[in-house]
Image (cartoon, rainbow, N blue to C red; front, side):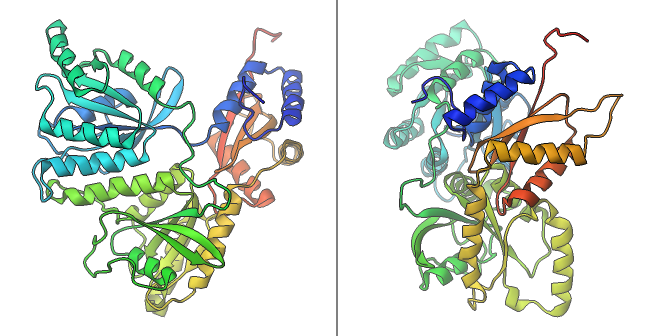
Length: 482
């Protein structure tokens, strides 16, 4: 019905009315349309960068994201704490999943590279396959090609380490892989990366495919995430009512996520039991690196992230990083404090203080105090998940939102800065899952004021258990009278 523009969450009549309002306020209709379209797209498309060790993947990732963020060293198999980055090219934003390449470990090189590629491909909309043109296609490269073919995702082939004309012939030899045209690049010097990224944008969808179940009656997808040994597998066994997952005192027993269809509260849910994310990963601990990569993939495919926290331990930077991963991915969020039955009065007192100070940024997330071992309060988990999903899918009509914004601005105007007082003129909710708002203003809104608006939006409309995305468009002067 609507071939030309994406109206986000707005219906046609509401959209027309909104555009009229924007025009009256002096906004360029194309700018308004672009803002709604951009905000309405939701999660960004995901590009997986795969290939065997030491072909220059991390250097290329740094080139793509435009900053030195992925760790790069001359020896193969250097690991990173973070695997997902945000990039932009030609005005389009997308996520990049950087996969390491391990030297010998317990799995053997072919298996380890294949395992990493598999986990990354799982979460991706398209893949960038990096091959060292100076070496040519190896048996390991061929193994990754077979994986890519099986996955059926669009693939762009980068022939790396082509530093000049003489390397072009080496790159041409990679036609033999059967993946189409090899794009010669030098990730070190930046040669050819523009053409490569143009091709990447063709392979990526404008907006990502829904990686979570929107099918009518399809089970909602829940990722269980948290540090190793916080009780994720025990929790899954408890909600399933049977031993479905190996539980071991040794941290990190779970390597791959296990998808389980579980009947709870009269509904079927799909639980993903993910391997724990470790703080630091060393070369010999390759399997733990795959675990963190796999966890990132599970979050990408989930609708709700249930973060388990071990109440016996102090809330750590690692716990907060895992929560940030879920929030940045735009998933609904529930915090489950596990092993609650083991707390004495003193630890409970200190834990409540920690929650107040360390978890302030996600005070909007439903909280459940549970014991996977004894089953304490497990009946509260499903209502918390349902509450988070409801917040995640909440939509505020534009008329109601603008009435609220008008009252808010009148009662709490933006502070005057440099003799000017920016005002929010109007706004709209451009999307859900998670709720995404675009505010149109007469000037720049400070970060503190945006946080205040988000807090008031939550107070007025609920949004329990969901991150909110707020973007602001400032009216251009367009040469009008001063």
